[in-house]
Image (cartoon, rainbow, N blue to C red; front, side):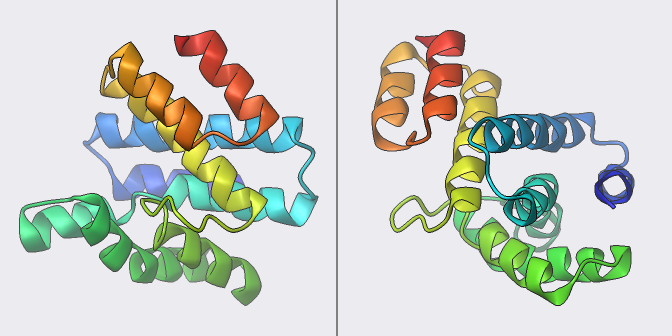
Length: 160
């Protein structure tokens, strides 16, 4: 099912290779960290789906507001994610959790659950590279955001 979801997201962002590259990288890091942290298979399934659709709200926000800041993404993304996940055939339980993650992936206080923590770490790993953050900013993110052993190791090896 994950490959179907990935294909649907590629179609959704057709003509926008930057967005496609982003969610595929976030998915890859999420899957890697999730497996290294030995998360249960049901959590990994939610995590992988969330990683693919976490930024689905960007397109809507750009069209609707001309802006795609994190708070607007959290507002617009869950319903778009829900429609896509239902069409692909995910269970209500997974859809509800994925929509929660999409609606909170730019909220860094009160992170609840391994899937949420890992999604945020994976998104940070990709954004730190794509946004070419300076070492000082990377160190701050490392100290404040990263909690998993595997996410910290990857961050150190990539940036510090």
